[in-house]
Length: 304
Image (cartoon, rainbow, N blue to C red; front, side):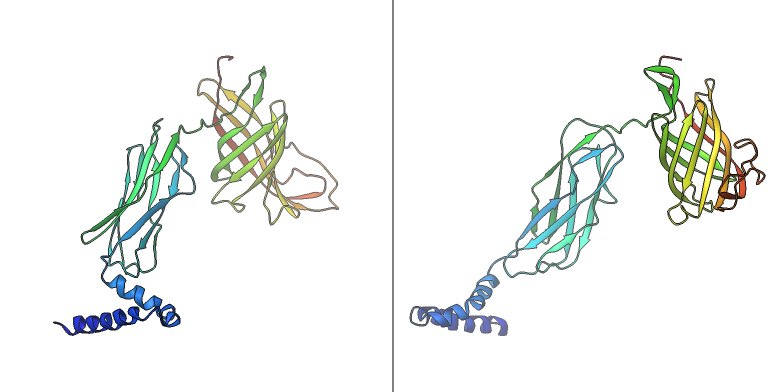
């Protein structure tokens, strides 16, 4: 018999004798209850419980969702290093970046957060996703969670107002050029009011909000940067034209970099046509002017 086995047998003999006297020494038994529990656990084989969850189980095509997988050892055991595998019941929901991961020793509980699922195509069938943990001869599976996939929402394009074919709605996503820098313009239109955002990664002002208006075929937009909105602004003015041959709509004009100047009271120049500092605005000094252009696919519908 090995030294460890002899020590274990000795401890068991002591605890067995102690159990016999528990009725006469209940306080002592309660005090050493945890020790009894540990000894009993030494004779049990390691076991584990696996759980899987996600913040959202309803995805649009193209969406990615993080998975949270937890492995709980049973009793007082530590689980040796093993592997975790995530399985999806449909090719429409792909496990990324990999479906397998190596995990180290687990004590208490092990949290695995490196798995994600991506909705790559639409299906109207529910999709089951489960996780399994394996170490040596031990393998345990989680209860599956169910995902659903919906089609990717159609991208809104500039279009004719359905109740008035003479009215153009500029709402949608545009590819724009500001000076020599390209970016993205996203517009929302309510009546004649324009709101939205801009993103020009290589421009002096990289991104911000938009507030403006549309009147006939002309537009005026304030490109606002949070840190500069009261002292400086980018004022964009121009008009738009629909090109049926290419199926697109273009906004063309000028962007004026303005700085607050209360003493400036003169308004001169052809806004949107002359992209120079010769264009003056009341209350603002024109620091710079540059060309602005934005293009978007136009939804002609059946009314054109």
